[in-house]
Length: 470
Image (cartoon, rainbow, N blue to C red; front, side):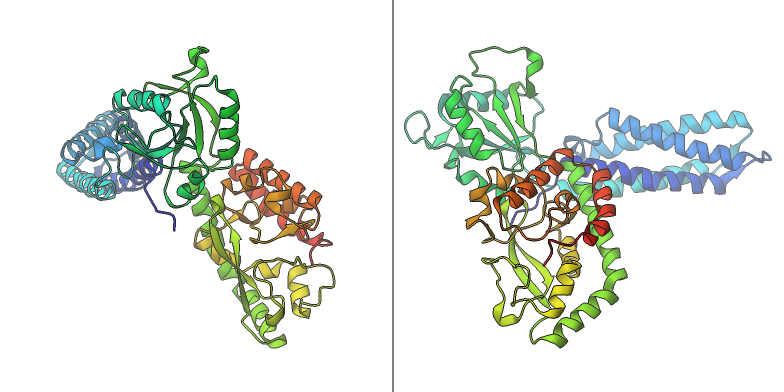
């Protein structure tokens, strides 16, 4: 089971959103109740004052870096500074609107101060609880895996540790060498395994960044390493510190003082991943509620035609090749089911029931996967998850298509770019699975929320072209 940790970018955006969501209505309601004016435009002026004051205050809080975890983990100073910034910003705007013949009754200031301070105190203490133990190498530090060992890795680590105000946690080193060039530990950091072990480690432990710390001049070895890890859903950088060829400073990204060459980026990270996940869950919940009569009828039809459960569970590859259990309405006879999909379903397959043919043709058998979306195992849109033993032309998918596992850099989906472009249903040939993978990687490269909504819109029309669904 993959360990959960707090993404600092998501946490900061949620706190900013909470400030706007709470302080704007609070400021508006209190100001409206306490305003004294014969000006008919007073409510509009007060509303503008509320919006302007809190937006300005939020920008100031951000400018003073009071949303940063390093600030929030120092609660006393953070609460005082945040309250003062919000108070001063609001008072400046409140004084400005008095020129528009709008005045407030005398007790408004202590009431406003008390409410605002109570909110700042409660919200910062709540986030402090989330960040507890997050300083240094904790929940919010950037978790880094080093590929390589010896002097190149030690130089990179030394540079990172010299970098001021940089929060990072080196989770370990991975290298295939076992000689003096790659000892069992570098400084206090231990070697956790070979490079091939990094994928399994990342499935259970969060890694934000992989730094390949070997000389760039070792071109052949560098290419071999990158080929073995490029499918992982994580940012990958090559340390430029030991490069004999000195590139322009603009060619590097810098992590603290360490120059890095960008190689691969995780397609969905931080806020985008969080936003997509929450939107998917909200839509899935609404869809389950609206489609519950349909799902109930399908389940009843499956049970009436043949004995056995209505739901069929199958192990499939999920995000980062993690095994997940995907739900479907059962479309085969129980005693002829194939949990590993070692034999693909073909046209006229005798294992499929009469109801099964209908629900497979219309993709109604996929509806229970909405519960997988609620659990965070699937997305609404993404590469379709495949069974562990699914084959094309007698070979497992990853054996016949180079880079197959790169499609697992994002969570798999109920529908996807390949499906709306006609590549759904049977994948018995190398060409069919290759086209699916091609479209899946294209989707990953082009991802946006707009593309997701476009695919969802096109999916019902793609179901009408169901000649490949058996």
